[in-house]
Image (tube, rainbow, N blue to C red; front, side, top):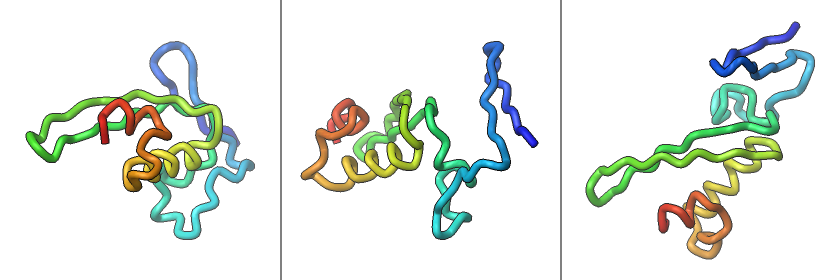
Length: 94
């Protein structure tokens, strides 16, 4: 079985149910509803300022698994030692 999600530009994003798309220990906590091991993902992050509640949008793409990229973003946003490791943390000066 193949599950396809149209992207509105004439192409589609396809998941095959015979692929292992998630390895989260608690699947209900998966950041992508059970598809975190999907590769080549375009994603959008909305960043909200704690000072004035201003919102900014960051569009990213990953060649590796989304979960790997997601965890790298979390690491760079939460740990000052790694704050220059992702464009997201560099772009928003976090």
